[in-house]
Amino acid sequence: MRSIWRSLDPGLARDIALVLAADTLVGVSFGAITVSAGLPFWLPMVLSVVVFAGAAQFIFVGMVASGGNPVAAVLAGLLVNARHLPFGFAVADTLGTGWRRLVGAHLIIDESVAFALAQPSPDQRKRAFWVTGVSLFVCWNLGVVAGAAAGTAITDTDALGLDAAFPAVLLALVLPSLRDRHARRAAIAGAVVALATTPFLPAGLPVLLALAGVAVAEVSRGRERLPESS
Amino acid sequence: MTATATTLLVSALVLGLGTYGCRVVGPLLRDRFSLSPRVERLMVTATVVLLAALVATAAFVEGKAFAGWARPAGVLVGAVLAIRKAPFVVVVLAAAATAALLRLAGVP
Image 1 (tube, chains in turn brown, yellow):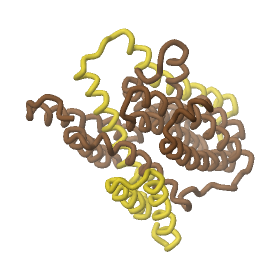
Image 2: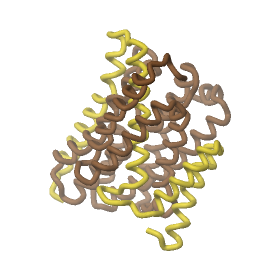
Image 3: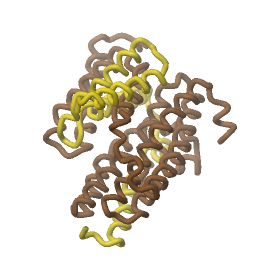
Image 4: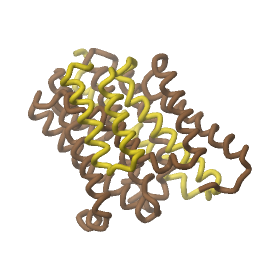
C-alpha cells in the first residue's frame, strides 16, 4: 500500500488524503448517530464493513432507528446502491484479474470511481482506484468505530460544511469529462431528471433515472456525424 | 425499537450481500464479452451522468426536501473555483467553509 501511495502523483495523493479526512469525519458521525439512536454499537461497524456505502448506511439506520421494517430498510438501501451496477461495468478493466477483481468490486464507491474517471491513462486510473478504495475502506471503518465509541462527539458534520464538500469533490473530479460537449449535455439532462423526480420517488431511483441522459449524448453525437470529437 | 439484534444483523448482511452483488456483476461479466468502442464510450458517459446526478441531488436535496441554501451555495462556490481550475483542495475546502460560515450566520 505504501509503495502504491508513493507511486501516485503527489498532487493526487494530497487530493485523495483530503477526501479521506472528510469521509473519516462523516464515518465518525455515522457511528455516533447510529449508537445514539439506541441501536447496538456493533451495527454501524458491521454495516460499514459489509455495505461500505455511506448514503445507503445512513438510510438503513434512519429507517430502523425510527421503528421502520428492516426489510423495507434493506430494500431502500439496495435501491440507493443500485448505481454500483453501472459503476461496476465502467471500472471493470481497472480492477485487474482473479482475486483482485473480487476484492476490488467491494471497493467500488462514488469516490474511487470518480478519482479513477479523472485520470488520463489506464495505469493511473488503476492506481487512483485502488489507493482511493483501500484507504477509504480503512478510514471509513476507523471513523465509524471511533464514532460508535465516542458517542456524540461529532454528530453534526453539517456544521463543518461536509455535506457541501461531498458534491464539490465529485463535481471537481467529473469536470474534466464534461469538456466533451456531448457528455456535458448528457450530464445536465441527467441532473435535471434526477432533481425533478426526487420529490416523488424513493431515494436512489432518481439517480438511476438520470441514466436517460446518456441517450441525449448519443442523439447529440449522432446529429453531428463527426468522428470522435475528443 | 422493534427489531431484534438478530434481525438487524441479518438485515445488515443481506444489504451488504446485495450491494456486493451489484458491484461484482460488471467486473465478472467483463471477461465474457469484448466491448465495442461505442459501448465503452457509453459506459464512460453513464458514469459521468450518474456522478453528475449525484452532485445535483447531494447539493440540493436532504431526504426528499430542499436542503436549504447553505449547502448549494457552498457547492456553487466550489464549482466556480473548479471551473477556474483552482486546485482540488481549494475547491473542496472553499465549498465546506462557505456552507459552514453561512450556517454560522444563520442561513439554514
